[in-house]
Image 1 (cartoon, helix red, strand yellow):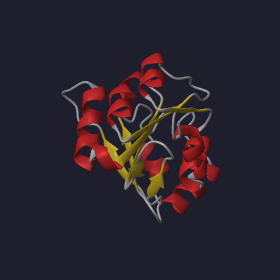
Image 2 (cartoon, one colour):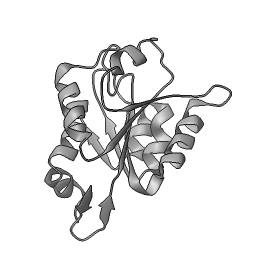
Image 3 (cartoon, one colour):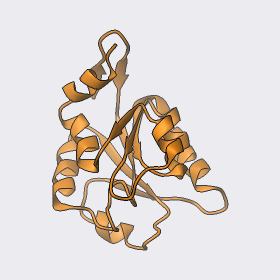
Length: 156
């Protein structure tokens, strides 16, 4: 996906790294609408979900969706584990969507960071680290369905 930002840069996004709890899933569940958007986006992007699986149901919820579920390794802080996943995907070609304190590093280092201020709220570090703040995961994913919305937000 190539997005020309007037007066700024060209974003080349191959991967979309999503936080699970509070971002992709609300109360541990992925809505039908979000499922449909994920299927649509998978035609143009590699979708990955990073999770510590707080509720223990990420695998079940993501089953059958065209995405890669990446469980965070133990032995290190979650924010550092997510950053390692971002580096492996390529931070210069990966957009990140998250809402928690453990997402702040990846939101700041990704080629594009989008913070979701949804029902669960968003940590102030995540909000400060992101380039874009949205109300819902549907809004965040919608930016990649209609990239003109991103252009309008990011242009000078």
